[in-house]
Every structure is written in structure tokens, then in C-alpha cells.
Length: 158
Image 1 (cartoon, rainbow, N blue to C red):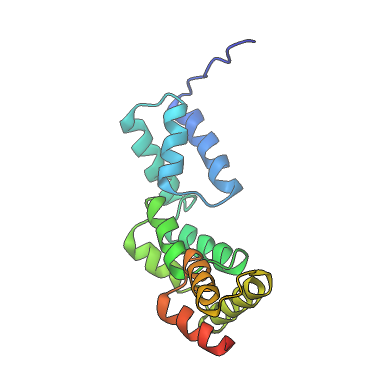
Image 2: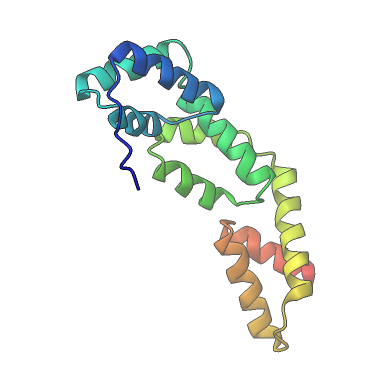
């Protein structure tokens, strides 16, 4: 099997490739930085390229955080805690995380929680009511929902 040689790009070529990379979908600075290292640029060239991409609004971490939150809470029905952990793991600033979390509609958030609870309740095989309640609570908390909301939802189930 042939070993694929990595091509080293000039800063100008790398900027064009990185712009296309960012245009495809929202990216964090960290993701773009890793991509640029793969292009064989020096750390100074990388930072310069990231500044250019930010100025041209191709990288916008606040916009990234908002898109991430919409996707995770809207489609995957994640809770705030899991979303915040995900954003922090991607190196997003606290300010951008806060801005992103504003995308959450409290009513839809609660509907998501209740929907997950109902679905899990139908498939849970545990007969012992105490253990059953505990398993449902663990499941919802693993999805990132806050303990007080989980307890309220479990009360509404009874």
C-alpha cells in the first residue's frame, strides 16, 4: 500500500482551503487550528490565518455555539449540562457557551425531557418502583438534564 504524502501548503493556499472547510459547516477555532497544522504551516501562520478567517466571519464561535445547541437540544434532545460539557470540550469560551444556551426554549426543553421520560418508561423492564424510578432518573441525568427538573418530571409521571 502506498504511503500518502502530506502536501505542504503555502499560507495563501491554506487560507483558501481553510475557508472552504469553514464554509461547509460551522467550525471552532480549535478544529481549524488542527486542520492547519496538518497543512504544514508554522504556528504564526496558523494564528494569522485564524485571525483572517475570523475577520471574514468564516469562524464565529458564538454562531458555532448557537448551532451546536440547536442541534443537540432540538434533534438529540440533550440537556443543558451535557451541551455545556460538549461546548467546553471543544474549547468554546464561557461567553459563547452562555450565548449558545440562549437558543434553548424552556417549554420545548421541558417537552423534550417529558418525551424522553415517557419513552424510557415504556421500555424499562424494572418492576421494583424504587429501582425503576432510580433508573429513569439516571437515564435522564445521563442525557444532561438538571436533577431538579428530572425529579419534577418523575413526580408528574406518578
